[in-house]
Image (cartoon, rainbow, N blue to C red; front, side, top):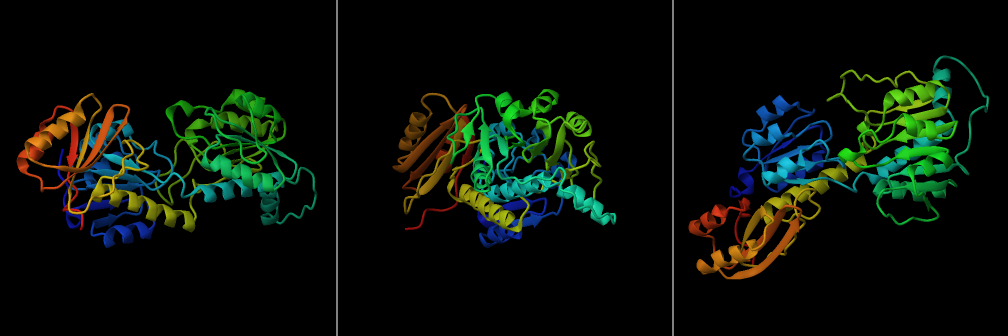
Length: 412
């Protein structure tokens, strides 16, 4: 329930080699920015959070309940990636901490990697490359195929799955997809009613599901057994959705012709640390170090996008595309002072806020309320500067989670 400081007083910590454009954007906006190259463990992060108001991470740093409980100054967290399962969203919401990510910025990069791997596996380029490095010359076409005419099964038809569908179809593949949500087919893609139906007909199966806990262990022994003999498997989504021991068995038995894996249940925190996996050393298996979105173009776009979201939240309370707070965006009314109030979503809160403002002779010039599950979020522009009595009254409401006041009046 703290008030905001001026931008010059707000400290930002960016971890895991977030693109320099993010730092440049935040420094230009007046924030004090500290950067660190690698991910931090829980104890390291707790030690680093003293006085930090904004935190930027990627997938390797986990923002746990314990971290949040020891970071009273924290206002917002930016996940400079798509995934957010490394952040305890419920704990963040309880403390009035907004979380933002980049749901669209690296879509193209992930799709291009998936297509490259599908072609490489289908042509068995991994084996050819390994043989050449060993001095072996083998021009045999055995086991090498075109992707044209082959059937691609996409599990998860969101932004990445949808764009992959379109580009794969342009390569001449026949596309099938399965999603638990009701998704509109793109191009000539055909929806499968069950995952089993997709597995039975696909030559290539690729996972593009999100990180919700319900997807843990989604793909295991039964699913691999249901795939077509000689088919290929890709996972560029989340490491915990796949049983890697089962995948190894089906590669070694010859049931599957190959696989490409970019995400793992346990991943090293930084460059140079040892990577261990039961998938190492298998034929026609591509292992990449969680680089689906790791192109310079994607990282630059992510840096600019998430930094912008954090800045707009701090300065105006805008929560558009926040992953845990109600999405509210209210244009600033010139000459007004803004109040940002996050509260428990119970009846009558807005009336109570407005009654309190009226008692302090504050005229409301603009107001917008949004709700999401147990949370309510209201932006209010008033014509007069806040008084301490007014702010104390809003903070004292038993439903208040956090009260913020973006600095200064909106410009006339």
